[in-house]
Length: 457
Image (cartoon, rainbow, N blue to C red; front, side, top):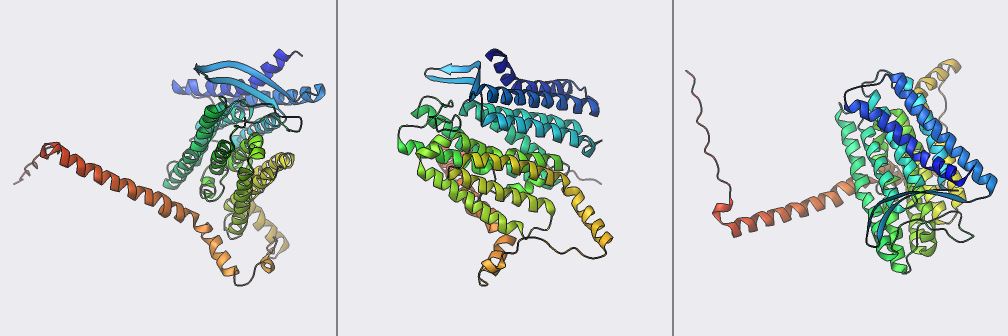
């Protein structure tokens, strides 16, 4: 096997899902729809090939003792010293992610065949699922922060559209819009970090670290302040994608989407892309202790908040969403402390477990009731009771904090969005007043006289 064949396999991890998206989208554009079995076969075959290719690359690199392989697909554009190179990178971080993600998308596609059978949006669901898989493969295999941004946006778009999948009801649309706006606000951090790296270093491509580095990472600016700024911008981007406090309110609402999409987005893959980006930014975290400790602080605060709030939820999907939030917060702590291999193992294990739990959640209540009927009594509530660790005076406050979900939604709505809205309305009023004063009476559009009422006799 030559290096050229390995590069072809690496490029195929992105090309095959992209081809599957084109096969589904182009006929639909001209009004032709495939049968359900054909749709599932296309998606299943594409991600089976992707999984097999990723497995072959992992085995070959292990046998040869190599650490990485790159595939240069040319340049999108070049302007002066800035170049947008299309480079894919397969190493000890990206290939396990690519293998696990492709396999899980294939499993969800097979599971959804019966779950989404005869659903009105069956075709739309599978097209969005395929686009999501393509976006994830681009994110994890991207050899630069510029290319990561492309896949990052695909994942965010498909996520919001699947939250609002049942658009005939107002709440899914509202929650999908909330998730989309949270993504957009936080994606400014990713775009800003890429622009800052181009300004400081001249490139946003991954660089090979020293012998102690577990994998390639983002370049580190020579200036300490610039390094901290880039790190904090990346942290801001990951907080939105991974539902870290105070931006965590969209995650339980995202469970409005179909259960298979909830499993793969918010239990398995999408929510872990934030930790993946931080693992890629390991050199920046090492060079900026402030950023590393901020990652630890955000993760610890999220884990504590989600642990308390999840204990008072009354539906299983909300409980699982806060459980996912808790584990991702702990993964943030591990990354900030430099425990990167532990964080990688934690991501894979948690993603597999949580995806299975969310897929089983619709049958949980049914199975629980049958078990109680079989044994003839009510099952006792299980769980770890930690009341003895909390002083009695604090227990009512913590209980209220959990019921209100930390009041983060009200804080963002009234304290941040509300204040900015009032400021912008004030600026608009001032602008209108100056326009009237400078333009004079003729600046106002003429008002048409009211039409005479027709009198019927």
